[in-house]
Length: 345
Image (cartoon, rainbow, N blue to C red; front, side):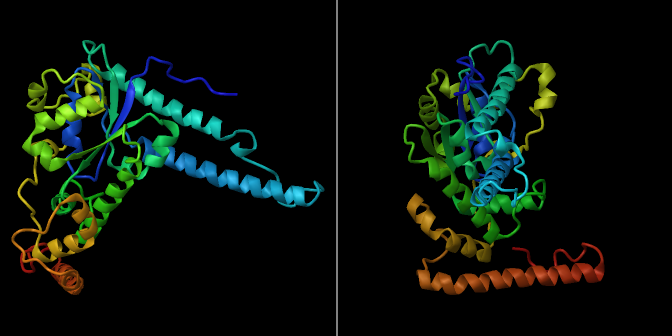
């Protein structure tokens, strides 16, 4: 039996902002948050931390239940050689599980709409922005097949520089510390987000660099894509990106605890990487950069693919050697007074 829609026709449309961390996704979210027809929560991690494990366990249990049932049937129903059939898979089906997933998403959307100020009485779109969403687009499509996707793309060298800088400060718990791992993170998020690019009417790519050059023009594109009015787009582009939560919800929703650099355009000076780091990032992302039109760095001479392949391992080894020496000195001395003795990548 088909399950009824949990939110009925009263729920707004659902959209997600995709992109690698440090690509300008928070900046775009904050700008769109100022639009009177938009409601957006802080990062919920709904798909990565809640729904992805839920669906993964369901699929595993369903496979086990199917194997056990086959074993019982092959035994002619005599006895129970595979043990009892246990778990939700014995009573629920995919439709039931999807209904539960949609119910949780609907609850997030309803609560987000309820959290915004009373004067915002015409919320038409709820926008969720969690970078890990790029790795779960299949799941998003499964439970919300009308989702609209805004994919923010930024030069991987700038992303890597920003990630590494964050890893040494406020992002130490999650940001990669090496050029290679930062490049891999950029690639994984880019390729994951582009998995839904076939849905051309629900997928829009936006360049971070284009937003910095012409934010009003890019916002007009985005608002048209979301079927939202673009009146006052110039004022929107210069707004501080207020989330406009009700006073009693501001602390709970985290409206005042956003990392400051996310809205300042930090990282606009290219590229902030050492020579070895830059070579590693450029080599790792070469194919995708070429496809996206991000050329080689101007201050470095052009290299053939064979030259890059020869140089990058050496650059990586040098960087690793510096880290090993520095760590050894720190262990030997027992403090950080030697931090400047060995150059850092």
